[in-house]
Image (cartoon, rainbow, N blue to C red; front, side, top):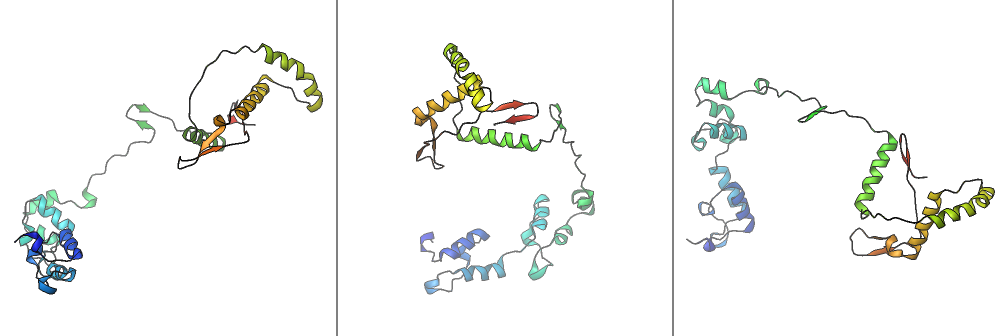
Length: 226
């Protein structure tokens, strides 16, 4: 009989496939002998051999035809003891071990690797934040390096010119880093696509009409962006 002539509901076919039941062995209660899910369940309860996972594993390990074993469990389910009863005593003792008999694997110290010893140093709260920010920056912004030689003569002359006026007005000393930061801000405002980002779905460009610049300063115990 061809499979396309077998009448069965999709649910019945799925359940039979999950249980490894041949639908041709199941009597259908529907119209024209159509097999329903309930018919498969009835067949399973009356015909399929029930066995616990552990009992089945032991039977397979010792090439025992568990389908022929008379189970002593609920509704004839084959239990571990039913399979062990068919094994010679020495095989049972040697191959079926309780959890207490299983040798424990020696634990490897967490400061040892296949290549040698390591040292673990807990991070301070500051270093945790630094690590988090560096990872976020790496994942959200293209990372590349450009090297240029720049003639700083005019910038140094500008610093010398504004050094005293700014010191008198603010009490702060103007550094070369200050002037470099100012140059970066002006360039970003002039070329907004350098100061752009993408939405999370990568479908839209966001142009930032402002510049939020921070200069990282290395310290003995970490990194700060004042």
